[in-house]
Image: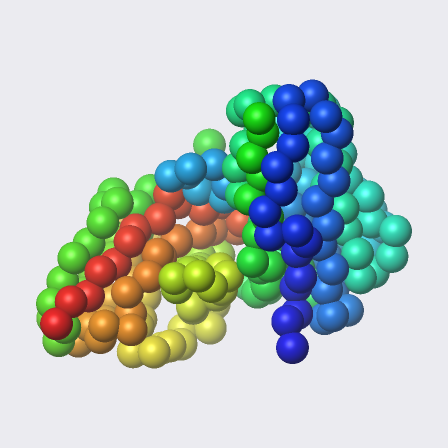
Length: 114
Length: 109
């Protein structure tokens, strides 16, 4: 009964080759988030969707894009992955954006860039 | 700038010993604070949040605005408490969770 699902769990791509990571949720939550977590660092928010409204963090590189075709799915597109983009990518959802709202995380996709 | 600091990368204790995982934050307003936990091979999940003032799995955390701290405590550690613990804050509704770098808690018998 997984609530936030991420596929694949491991992704290997080549330097400069576009890659897409996917996230789906069965919670019917309004908000979906993408975090990047590099080795030994804290998860860092890249962007989030509130329903269909896209919210980009100010320091998220243009190389990272996202799509949310419906409530259940959200995709992270990396247009030209560099070696520095190797990281764990975490998808999370929350029912709303109120203070104190719990975020539910997926298991993550570990991206390796060769 | 908003920041969460967890000064200890690793905390090792014996079973039955008290545990305190430190968390300090930097924020001028009134943030909402959380502790998230990640057990081995499992996803990141909420442990507790300040707004609920709850105790989960024997853990408690008190917000000290004077010291800007939100330390996580448990009087008697169990082996199953071994995990990575992240302190996080959200500064206002509709914005990001800001995480600390995490502390690995290792409880041995």
